[in-house]
Image 1 (cartoon, rainbow, N blue to C red):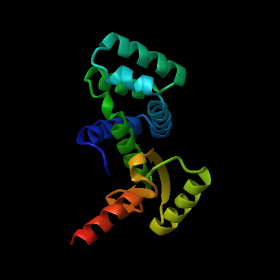
Image 2: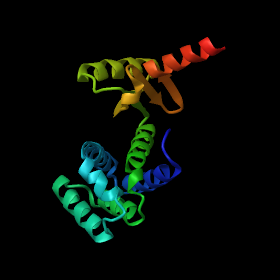
Image 3: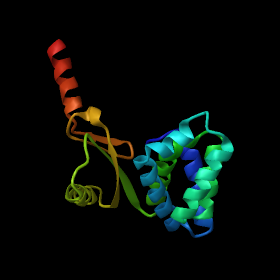
Image 4: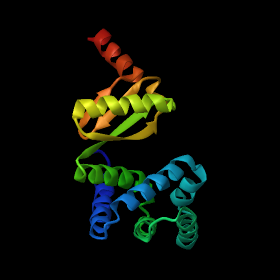
Length: 179
């Protein structure tokens, strides 16, 4: 599982609470929704990453967002805690680790798929089906974009990485030519 130690620690604590209260599916759904909003909104990221924005302002933004998105109070409290401790930049890592831990508990896996640009949904559907056959488990895909890949796809499942990016191929060619 990738992500930071901090991300895994918060994710594990959140998952334990969610499982105790039988809310794992709700927390997972809310967390995926929040992560999508986080990734899409530069303004939201700036509020939580800018040290000039005070704790009360961050809390107000978070409370309003939690209300609009109807986030489970357990998740809203976790997000407030991350904000209060100035660790909100770890939200994507918490989400990724939570999803991976929840999937593992259910006997499935999370595939982190990084592409240079957004691909059609049909591609992700075919990829998920292929991975499910290969791993004989249900696969959930977490999409990421990294323009530095130039083209191609990097897929990470647990500690396995399948790198089909042009950037890696160019680096391999450079090493071969210099050797």
